[in-house]
Amino acid sequence: MALTVFAVIIARPGAEADLRNGLYNLVPKVREEDACILYELYESPEHPERFIMYEIWTDEAGLQAHNQMPHMQEFAEAARQWLAAPVELIKQET
Image (cartoon, rainbow, N blue to C red):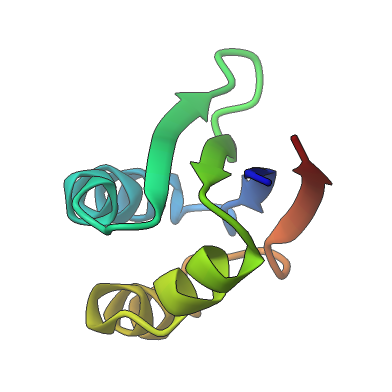
């Protein structure tokens, strides 16, 4: 059963551009992962600090493998200075 994930990402004030660039650089790397079915980034025009990643994974194990990928570890390290709060994940099996 596939797993749909909405990741709500909020930038720290003043870090919006850095977070945006980091996220856009991440997208093509994630799309190459075996378990990735869909990985799309959306920005809020009304709230430039808010981003939503719409993701579909083959299953929970695929999502867990994604979180261990080197590019995700590198992004997580850099994003600590850009994020206003932990990323909120909303998951649903589809």
